[in-house]
Each structure stands twice: as C-alpha cells, then as structure tokens.
Image 1 (spheres, rainbow, N blue to C red):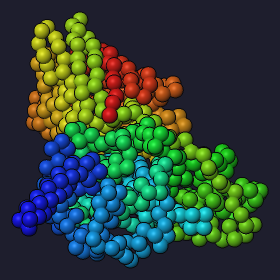
Image 2: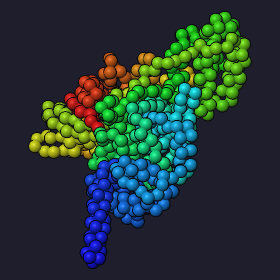
Image 3: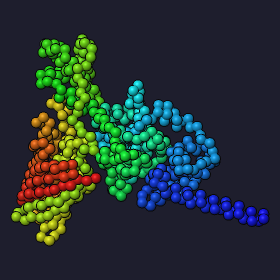
Image 4: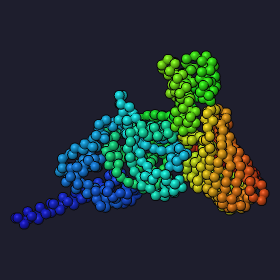
Length: 606
C-alpha cells in the first residue's frame, strides 16, 4: 500500500509540474508578456533590449519562456524583486498566478509614481529641427500627467527615448552611427518643463500634446513598465528603431491596435500620431484631446501679426534705436498701443537672447523697455490664443509612389517612382518646416522604346531656407542644401548621367505676406557630371517657391553652371495641385539643351 501511495504521489507531482510547465509555456507566448520583454516579431527569439542585466534568466534576452520561468521563481523566493518588475508582477497576478512571497513595499517606486499621482498619459510631438540630423523628422515624447487644478503641468514627467551620444560628436560620425546602429539608447525621465524649455524656448520648436483616453489601471501599468525600463539599453537606429517606434510600443501594451510596423524599414513620429487619431480603445476613441504649445518664435510672429501697421512701424524704430521710445511719436500713442508695442518687443528681446544675437543692442533695448513699461498701468494687452498651425496627424503622409508621363523631343515615356520619406518643398506645411525639403531614397524609373532607364536615385536631399518671417529684425539666417545621388540628364541627351555629391549655401527672402520665398544659392558639385563633363563644378541658382492659389504651389529656378568647356544652364518649374491628404498632381517643366514636360500623379502613404 505504501508503494502505491508513493507511486501515486510521484505521478501527481510530475503531472503537476508538467501542467505548470505547459501553462507557463503558453503564457510565455501571450502578446503582453512578449511586449513586456520587447521581443522582436515574428520569431520572438530576440529582444530589442541589449543589456542582459535587464533579464532575470541568463537566456531571457532570447527566450520568453526561460525569462517567464525565472521570473515566477524569483517572485516565489524574493519579494523585493517585485519592486524592479512591478508591471510583470501585476500582470502575472491578473493571469491567475499566485506567489508564496507577500506583496512588497516599494518606497522608491511609489515615491516616483504616487507622491503626486500619475492620472493620465499623453504623447507629445516636437516639430522638426533642421539644425540636428536626429530631429529632422520631429521628435516624440511620452508624458506622464500628474498635474491637477492646483499643480502645474510643467511638473509632469516626460519620458524620452534617445541615443547616448558623446559630447561634441562629429556630425558625419553622428549621422553614420545613427543610421547603422552605432549608439546605445534608452529611456530617461525628466520633469516636463525641462523638455518644453529645451524644445520651445531654445530650439524654437512647436509642441502638440495628444492626451490619451486610457483608464487608470492601464495608465498605471504603463508607468510601472517604464519604471522597469529606465535602466534598459537598446541599439539606436535613426530610421526605424527610434523614439517613435519604442514609445509607440509602450502604448501598444494596452491597446488592441498596432501603432508600429516591425517589417517597415522606417518609422516616423507623424505616422504614430496619424494612427493615434484613428485608433480605438474600449470601444471609444483612443485620443481624448489635442493641445498646442507654440514655440517662442511662433509666439513672437503671432504678436507681430496682431500689431497695426502704425504700431509695427513704431516698434521697428524702437528696435533700431531704443532711445526712440522717448520720441513724441511713441509718447502720443494711447496706453493700449504702448503696451502692445512693448509686449511685442519683450517677446523679441527674449527670442534674440535665446539666439544670442546683437547682445549689446538687445541689452540696451531691454533696459529701455523696462523703464517705459514701469511708467504704464499694470495688466497686459496682448493675448494670443489662436494659431494657424495644424496638428501633425493632418499632414501629408511621408512615403510616396508615383506614376508619370514625360515628353522630350516628340518622344513620350512612362515613369514610376518611389520615395521612402518624407516631404519636399511643395508638400503641405502641416507639422513641417515650411519651404524646406527632406527626402530620403527618392527614386524614379522610366520606360522608353522598350528600354528601362533609372532616371533618379537621390539617397539624401535636404534643403533649409530659414527665412525671416517678419520684416524686422533682419537676421543673418543662411539657406543651405545637400544632395547625394544619381540622375539621368535626359534634357542633355538620352544617355547622359550624373553621379554626384553637392552642397549649396545662400540666402532667402519672404514676400507676399510670407507666401512667396525667393532664394539664391552658390552650389558646389563633386562626381561624374554630365552637364560639364567635369569631376567638380559650381553654379549659381536663383529660385522662387510660392503659393499660387489656396494650396496650389509653384517652385521655379534657374541654375547657371560656371566651369566646364561650355556654359550650361538649367531652367525648371513644378506646380503641385493637392487633391486630398493622400494624392496630388504635379506638372513640371525642365530645359537644358532639350525641353521636357512631365505630368505626375503622387500617392502618399505611411
């Protein structure tokens, strides 16, 4: 009888262990567990997290099952491990698992999360910043909202994902490592006012906050997982495994819809916001509301628009000569106009101090403004609450495919095109830098007389004209461009091609109520150049970008090459006619030796 009892006991224990192991095996493939370990699709045999110290199991970085089994074991033997992995702990408890250790007190975690309780989550978009290659597409932050009616929102936490870049890193090294995974990256937390100050006040970038409609349990779950991630390391890839990808994956922990695409070779912040706007959560919209925070530059531009013509003229005179504030023309104004002029000039003072321009002059101007303002009654006159900037989800989608028809010298060809990302100077300006160009992997092929030609392959095409949006002060903003790639110069000859690296530097000016930009550039070329048959060349370029009517835009330019055996010049123009957010039509003209006309239909997608 004892033998049978022993056999039954051994069978029971073995069966229990097999069943428990089977249950853990199934649980290790649960989508939430895989997301908590940041395992890569579709095989889930490797985590995006690269430091093995993040995992409990030695094989945890490549085995969700081993990591789950080790996690359960530690929860049963060490109550304090809950404080490091509270998201795991609470999720496993919801799956019905019980642990022999009591619930732990985690004072550091609860001080971070609950001293001023986190009650909601927002995603924040910072507009593009042409002075930093990593920020050309804009930047995405996660904000843990702790503010109340009596607590300022600047005390909210902002969670940033970014590369760990050494100080004073060479720009070329920075771009190369960023593209090919040469940096470690990770999550960091700061009080939100630090990021708002850096983006809005220093880098002069507008911010859009998308507040999410998550319940308190899911909000807390994401906060707990962020606590787990604050020491984790990742490989940084500028194009895809970037801030947009990894922060969007945090939101995917608690929503059924996917904001990211693991098979895509790129990930752009505006794509996340477009999907957020369409996503649902518990049979409601995921998005609760959108808030806009203008940069210091945007505020000043809006203040300038609010001034009357006479007020603007007087403000300009005071800016040019601070002593003019004692002139009879200013003294004769009513109190309201005086306040409006002074408040606008104060905005300009702060803007110029940020840019560190005209330091001595701005110091004198500030002193004169303070003295004049102290002589006036209290209270402000300028209050701007409405801005023309639109939210990023309303912008044109970043990727493009096209079909075109081109006619040169009585010959017609059919063309197909593909652009990886992001926008050109004729695209919608929504959530983008106006009059700028940021295109990566832009390609076109054509079919002519049963032959296939590669017409264009631009690996990188950047333009930043940096115009001054007010008539004064006249700032010394430089315009620049960089382009690297291949082109078939079909307006020279059918077989003429150029492979080149080029850069340009110049100036730009705004007219027509800031709807027309005129630019001039001095360009330098290096490579195999069909236009001049030289390894290097230079040119002068004069151009215009303007809005003709509504959203219909025109870009035209004339470029005169300087070197080579013969003088060569190129004149070209392109009109963009938008149909909707997904389509536009382009009509273009180009003349060198020959003349080409092209009709193109573009489809934009993400």
